[in-house]
Length: 283
Image (cartoon, rainbow, N blue to C red; front, side):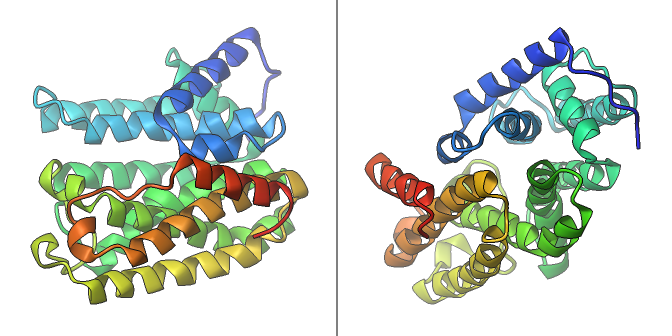
């Protein structure tokens, strides 16, 4: 393992910068992450901040950002991240925050490279088949769940191996719910359709239920793993699970034609109830 140096003032500034990124971009995630104790809370924010920066490179609708420029920015971000993972230093504060956590928690290139591969896919792949979607979801979501699991469990390798499948299924469920609720923007603004064979103009209630059945199966497997997490992380991940399970229920009650036009959300009052239930250890 790469030698990990002590946390420096620069690392603390980098972590604060990552927290600012998350505060500006995330809503449901921000609610759940507050339930984590330090240092795990800052570690998870630092991991997700890099994800947000990469997402912005590929998803920002600014027409002046050409595909070539986006590709170059993404390649540079990946190279900088891997270099910082090896040497412990980046001039990019978000990369610095990520690398500091990754080095400390044992997150390696085997999880980082698939993430950037999925981000690159968004620059050129407009529709998916079953195989390419599985690869995309693994890199864009499942590896993020595995990175978080490293932070939750520390050096407990046995628990990591046991809970890794549940962490992957949770990440997959979150991603697929986002695909469904972002159906309009992904198709109309970004020109992407993630679910194989899905025509947004002919989206039906039966196809909606088929997709949600798959998502709910992922959530059910994930719930079994969440119950085995340490208490602090269990509360936070239960809250996130509860928020997305609520989204799934709301999507199932929403006509497919409306999902095609409207991004479904969980009202803040309902989010608060879910957070309180997670604090009390209730699903």
